[in-house]
Length: 167
Image 1 (tube, rainbow, N blue to C red):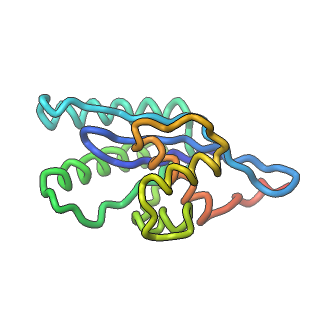
Image 2: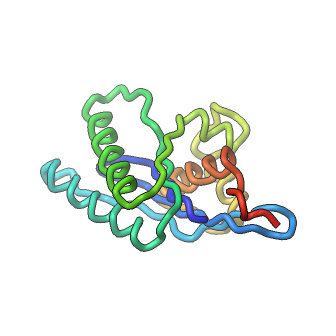
């Protein structure tokens, strides 16, 4: 089972693919891919959204995730940033649904609580826990990649092993 985690953004959209496999002592997770899709702020918004859409389509085709989990935007002080994040989220959700994936959103607090055990964890704490949970030794840069892996792990923490995957 593959989960594609997304930390949405128009300039930087983090993605992380986590595979959950059955093991003799329950399920375990491993990172399959992580990175950031970037679009140039100097380009116009429709072209940036089309670029993001093409990249999302490519990721979904390559990894065939069962679920696409996104961080839900609850509040932004910068309206322009909030609009871009909302547009990016919409593009990703539409691509995921069109590909037959389930789409689930999680609030930042839900993600932090599932990964770090504290809904107020900072970015550094989150990256440390993501690396620990996925046995990753190198830094995840940009940090949006670690955030996206955290979203995928959050989904797996909430939904566990699907029926038929147990040992």
